[in-house]
Image (cartoon, rainbow, N blue to C red):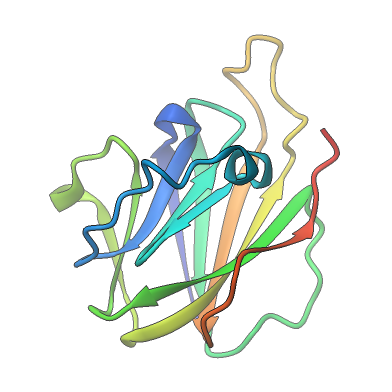
Length: 153
């Protein structure tokens, strides 16, 4: 198991987790449904929606097995992502891709569970908050997006 912590600029209220070799775009993936669930997917890429358009704390945990402990959070979504290159790029959507952080993983298909916490902690102007975003990845089979816990909006 490895845990990686980042502070990412969530420009346009999102950040990405994607295979280093993926050339997919999320341009058409941010439908109303994806916006409501705070998650968009395309081949080799996951777009995580955020409640702030600012720098946000993000943790990425890579595990060998599915997490078995419930996590207290406001919102929880699960999906899958193909990582054939073995390099997971973690970046804000306007970050310079060659300089973005990379996490080495075993090439293959991964399940991803995204936990969104403290979403209601934003300041009145929406610039400050205690919101956090945690992503847990483990080897698994391909799956559709599943909202495991819906945020109370």
